[in-house]
Image (tube, rainbow, N blue to C red; front, side, top):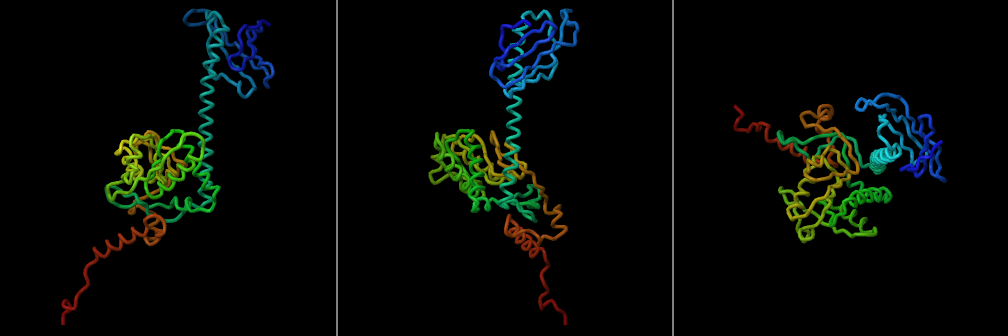
Length: 348
């Protein structure tokens, strides 16, 4: 067996040629790994140079940091020259690709785990309520409110005495914000600003850069506005906007606009829950990061199966906009009903 004077670029082990067309890989001394192998097989002729070639079929090592299976076959022409140089270059490049894929898979699994944890936390807090609800979002064409059978009650999260659950939510939202290194955390009143203040406190409890907090106030029918000194605080600063629940994304978009109106730079929007399928493009932000991204059915009033089956009186008047909806319907019914007959109209 002839030793190749090159170390394995992955684990500093050695590559050895057996002389019978195989390359064996041994891990570096002291590493917990067994030998893997590079196998040259499937002989053929290079269509370009007409020289003979063989294919690398497998390469592997049982060490967790060195397990690099090669998926595609690779044709190696015998005119390559220094096979050791080629192997070192190939394995380095391939390992970088494998490592990138592994990192992406780790992120995907972490995101999936986080989503399940968020669902479990909200379930423990009974923040996801089932019933017949009227949402704030209206259809632009008909001005009808949307109805649905689930409601995410953010107030339960904020008012809970379950400190573990609340702390988990705030820490996770703070982690999302910290990835963007903001100067200021901005939240639209009322729910978003409450979460934003807690996130700011969590970030400032950690070592490193301290952040400031600003609240975006409701400006009548004109969206949100930064005032009371918050406009000066945000001006020229890097900002992450915090929102509680994303339904249509309307409030979030208005809060983002308020930050930009005072020359703040919006880095991202972090939300407790995106239940409306809102995208970053919908609210004009570079990055949208919801702690929980969950799709819930919604229907226009005319198409609502709950209204058809149980009547409009079945809407929840404690959560959402059910109370406003019923008042609107009563006003509409009173306006459309014919006036009653007066005594003067009665014939004798």
